[in-house]
Amino acid sequence: LAIPELRVDGGMAANPVFLELLANACGRDLEVSPVAEATVLGAGYAAGLGAGVWPDLDAIGRLWRPRGKLCYPGKDDVENCIQLHTII
Image 1 (cartoon, rainbow, N blue to C red):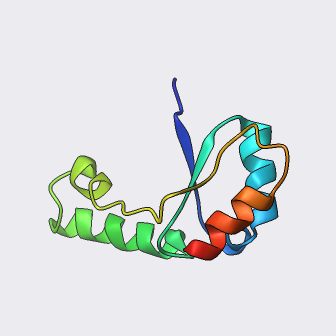
Image 2 (image 1 turned 90 degrees about the horizontal axis):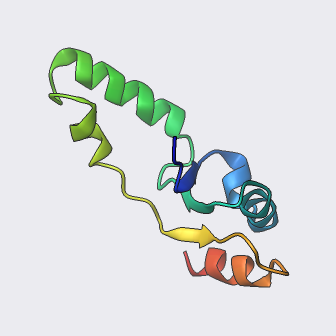
């Protein structure tokens, strides 16, 4: 199973140092959710799927609008990640 990038949400997603460490530890690019608490959004999507608002999971997947890739693995310091994070 190939995992090209990780999607991050929640309180730790606001911490650029954590994001850089996570990107390096996993060796994957990170995308931060536009919704800080994506669990609630996911529950809403599940309810909408069950109610017929969306026809399938692919339709819901197309709704993903990340802020952008914030951190990339392999950086020697966190400054690049901090600068990218403050732009957003």
